Length: 98
Image (cartoon, rainbow, N blue to C red; front, side, top):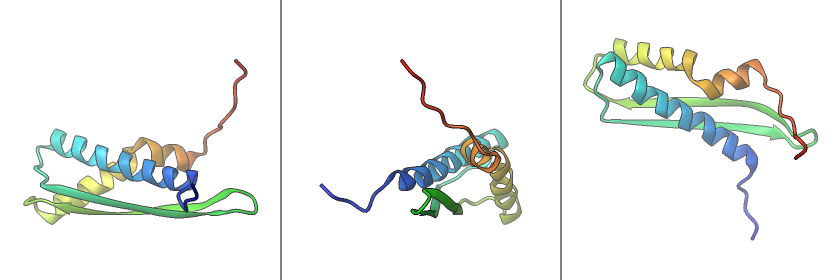
């Protein structure tokens, strides 16, 4: 089977899933009710070197909370979301012998 789906897509999905999860977690902690959240992540790879060209994401939040609180929530999650943090800092990936 051939597909345009690659490991790079999984990396983008991991960013989106992490942000989505953290938005719900942080909203609950802050007492904000969210009806729905959509996170879209995209990015590319330089296939000559298999290096990420970067990942960007957008967030849409459906809530009755004031927009200022939603904006603060999204900004806070951008700071604490684990996978985006790890990618921003760089992370070693090594293969271990069994």
